[in-house]
Length: 179
Image (cartoon, rainbow, N blue to C red; front, side):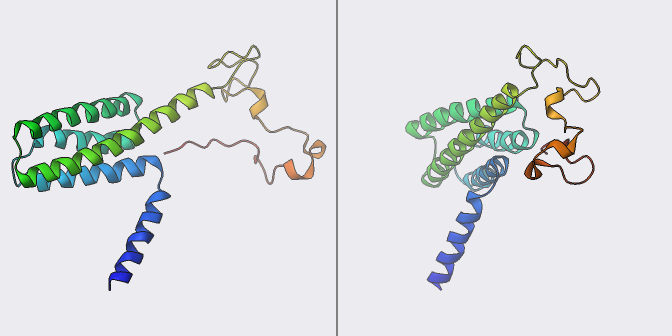
């Protein structure tokens, strides 16, 4: 019985490691939300912590850089206020336990949100360049697509090595956009 439970937990932990970052933030926000509900059974700083959990749920789906940066800041600020509240004796034993668990979840949520903010900044650096190399401006590329000519598939496929040859029609150009 205990071995089966341990195997299931290790499989779930392995699956969690392969989640993308917004999904990890969502899991931490749902954990924080449930911790807030359990903490509300005793003296617990519920309003601010519940707001952070809901902000985490919203920010992980929208990927708004302002919301993610706000989530990082608010997680840190409410962690400080939770520690002050616990030091003043404003929480009960159960509320303090839930508060510590919620602090851990909030800090994990903030760390993963900061990773997304860094990733969004890296995407800005990869913006299309013009011939002078200035980021964010499109130079001699196709005006209809907004990409420089270097991003389009070459028209003469026979001159490419066999490994680099596009397969099928329009294989060299994709319009992939992450959801």
